[in-house]
Amino acid sequence: MHIDILSAVPRLLDSWFSESILQRAQQKGLAEVKIHDLRNWSTDKHRRLDDYPFGGGAGMVMTIEPIHRAITELKGQRVVDEVIYMSPDGILLEQGLANTLSIKNNMIILCGHYKGVDERVRTHLITREISIGNYVLSGGELAAAVLSDAVIRLLPGVLGDETSALSDSFQDGLVAPPDYTRPAEYQGWKVPDVLLSGHQAKIDEWRHDQALERTKERRPGLLG
Ligand code: SAH
Image (cartoon, rainbow, N blue to C red; front, top):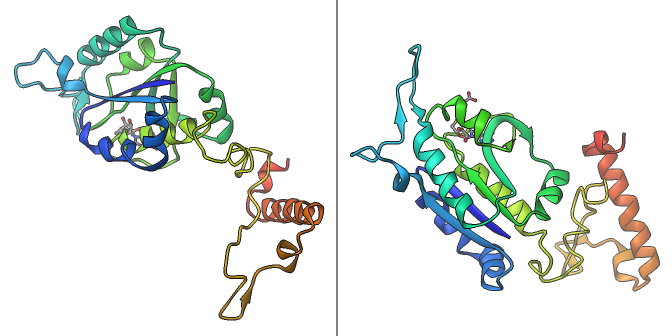
């Protein structure tokens, strides 16, 4: 999978992709993430990316031209399956959407800044708009990192234990059961006996029951 991220503040994203699981995914050649500075496509002599909103009002709006030039150039390099704009009013990111995107080959993710982008970017250049929640961030970079992380960790071979993404919350319509590790007792707080029993069928049943209980309690909507 190849992801191009377009940003006005690319440095915000560097460290995210150069550590841990996302770094390993790239080293193994399973994912390639390129973070681009949108200013490289600005024709303005001060490399500006924004301008005043027509009709007045507070805040600056990202102009269409550098974004259009960037997307056009990147589309010339490979077949792009999705051009995604991170936006608070986009479709909410959930596991199912991460699953859907994880089978795509190439994606461009556009991060907005300031007030957001000229509406014509959204109408003419974008295939999807995705939100990471009903709150407003100051830029799309964190949202793009969240989306990329949720998608990349699903690619086969990225997680050490092949089954672990499947046992995560939401994959089977339930949240995950509790996990414990050593020591079996800490300051009198004990690990449930069944997990130490060695009886795999009983352990599986216990985990399923726990997952069901937790889902009822915390995300009853998943059961509907
Ligand atoms: N004026 C816009 C908010 C702009 S916030 C509005 O009221 O909807 C600036 C940028 O941050 C946006 O262009 C978007 O790319 C990003 N952003 C902010 N909140 C986000 C969220 N919840 N999900 C995804 N992207 C978000």
